[in-house]
Image 1 (cartoon, rainbow over the protein chains, first blue to last red):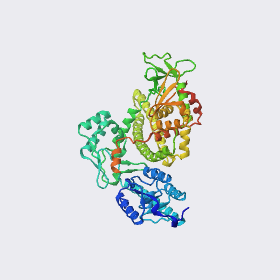
Image 2: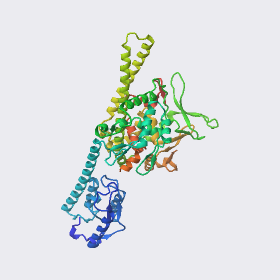
Image 3: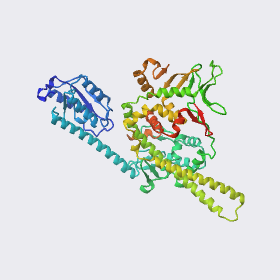
Length: 524
Length: 52
């Protein structure tokens, strides 16, 4: 290894790296322009030879593998395009230990011959590397601390009844408190009243839009009412005063002069109505046949529909082409042929890599939080229904205690009582089920080994799954499968799996496959 | 950031397909009693099985 005394820095090729994350503007002391100016000043003063234009990054360095410019710069350093890096401060290079460690490792490997900073003196000896390591540790601590403080701030604001979540019919004042939004608020009140009269969501949405309902976002976009938005609104206990977040809920009526759109009674009444509409007592159970509209006849291009053969002994799943003009001799094909193809195809795994794992980790927290918030709202909604059921149970029970009751009325009431008891039990079981789902969010996380194992075991998992999950998994991966009279001829995969599987197939048995178009590998 | 959240409220959170698939794959118990049965058959509405 070269000692610093032997190093002639004027002969080295430096790259200027400046970074300012757009995620946290204003928190960093130097703009990109200031960083470059000060670095150039140092370069002129020290006689450093800068190669090319300064590299500018706008991504955060908090998590590894998130900065394309930085990743490319390290590759170029390894390939000898540059010898050293010039930057404003070590925290511009890394705020996480993986990338900080990589830089120190590259110094040890002589892939980075020197580092220059405006605000930090680096020397390429044991002490210099220790100090650089400490600078990375401090950068990480700053970043972690900031994240902790922001989370704490959000939590505190929530307990004060302040939340960034916009709500229809309300606006947030300068303190972040929810205030009724004039005409929109009145229309939201009307909507709840219409719902208690069992008017359809479509009619309510039309009524509101005709009356001029429109919520303006901060970007100026106007959101009109739809039946989908109404479905969410009619479950949300916020409208009688309970604000729900991922891990908690607060009663806004106790915190400030919050104006509820409805009373808790109306909320309970609406939950009860929703229950009646969505859960009929007698539902007909159809046999679920997988891959509907996914199988295409190679001869005529029409969909082949699934069916089950009729027989006294064994029944078989088949896919049938019903196009009367199709020249197919055998109109149907056994499901076994198609599923054998899928099982074999997935035998080599889904080709997930570390990059997919990073994407997964990035989204899992967000999804998990959103899921938990929805579960909390479902619990509130079912608790509302349960209250309504218990109230009716009590009324009917008291009525039945009367002595001179008409036998027909008694029979009807007894039947209703049994029905309500069953419904109450079902709601209690639902609430219990939802409460069990509110587990520690960390349980949702997979380690990289578990993640890659799932990818490699995809075939076994699809085999073991029931018909509904089989169907769902196949729909995530495939757009369709084209079959002739004997076998699966080709398939179209959906992104990102199309690209992943394409790479997998290229690196393995490329000779067995040909390509038709991008993202649509054809198996032959 | 707040504006971003404002935009998101009325739209479904777009999660990536990998995440959704991972949730599904995790939900399957490959050691369950039914796993082997599911390899070659699916269930029908009468509690019977239909061969693939």
